Length: 306
Image 1 (cartoon, rainbow, N blue to C red):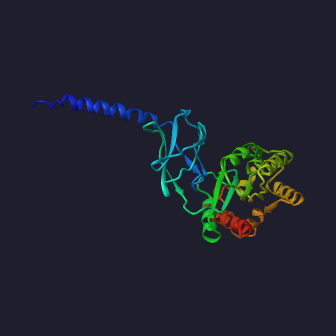
Image 2 (cartoon, rainbow, N blue to C red; image 1 turned 120 degrees about the horizontal axis):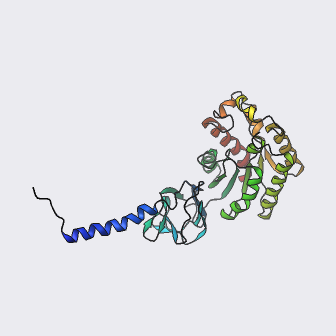
Image 3 (cartoon, rainbow, N blue to C red; image 1 turned 45 degrees about the vertical axis):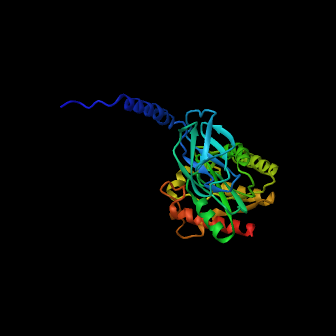
């Protein structure tokens, strides 16, 4: 049987297609979108495309597309983050992607462009008790939208972060998200761990730095006490300052400086089954704990938004 030979024109077309496709495949590793912050917003708001692990340094010619519309403004770009402004045109659930010229250089994530103006923008800031992935903030966002009005809860949690690291990061975060009106800070769990064992004085200095940064933006936060740890996790929380030590210091700091605060620790321990709110690590929130914290933060925030 004779082998079939493709016409020369067909060969040229196949070669051209291969040359066109290969860069897209290779460039697909340029920027992997791990998550979007926030996951919805209005036209003109800013959206951060994040990859916490970092990627190959993105070239300067990248474009962020919302559906079939490119953002007209990329505000900043680094190996771990691209910040873009939401363009006019797309509404509802739209795909977000990164392109270089004609080539798709990222995966695709979904973002919701809201038609109704958002009245309340809340920044949730802290360590892994806040985020950064799907946490209590999504539940809180849903409750506020259903019961208070058009709201946006922006999850800016960072796993493993200390108060000092958070103080250094806060200014950049506030420069990304426009029109934030309320901030709550839930941070310090890594400081009181015996692995870090940050002195209370250094924790307070970092907290003061945060307050100064917020003050320059005309913002006053809600300070949130740390939840307790389970008996199994207490072996990592025995050196002064412990969770309880820091919570006492935080309450006093808030009262003396007339800063709003919410006692999440007390909200936990007054529940007979509070240990079920924490996962096997005894530190992070379980699914039940996510719902409990969302409801608790709703009770703290809702009166401020009416």
